[in-house]
Image 1 (cartoon, one colour):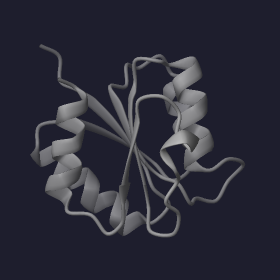
Image 2 (tube, rainbow, N blue to C red; image 1 turned 90 degrees about the horizontal axis):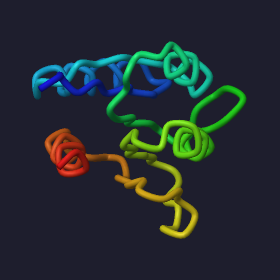
Image 3 (cartoon, one colour; image 1 turned 30 degrees about the horizontal axis):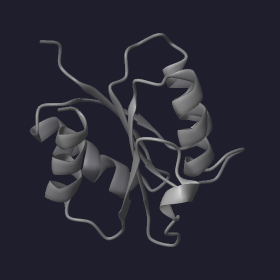
Image 4 (spheres, rainbow, N blue to C red; image 1 turned 60 degrees about the vertical axis):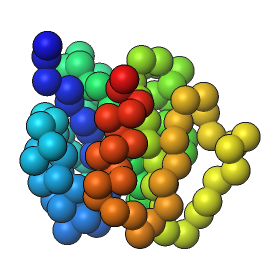
Length: 119
C-alpha cells in the first residue's frame, strides 16, 4: 500500500515543523505550506495528497476554511482536518467530511483523527 501523504498548512513555522515531525514519526509522508495559496499550488502539481491538516487563521488571499471548501470541490477524496485557537466554526459552516479540532490539541489526537478518517 502506498504511503499516505499529508499536507500541513500552518503559518507558524514552529507549529508546522512540530506537526510535520509527529506525522513523519507516525509513518506519513509530509508536505508543508505556510498559507492556503502555497497549499493550492502544491495540490495542483498532480502529486496525490491523501489529507490536509490546516489552520483556519492564516495570511494570504484565503483562509483555511475557504481552502477546505475549494479542496472539497476540486479534490473530493482528500481528507481534511481544520484547527484554530481563535475560531470554532459550527458544523453547518464546515464543508462535508471536514473535521475540526480546536487548539491547543494533543498531537496524538490529531494523528488518531487522521487515521480514523482514512479507515
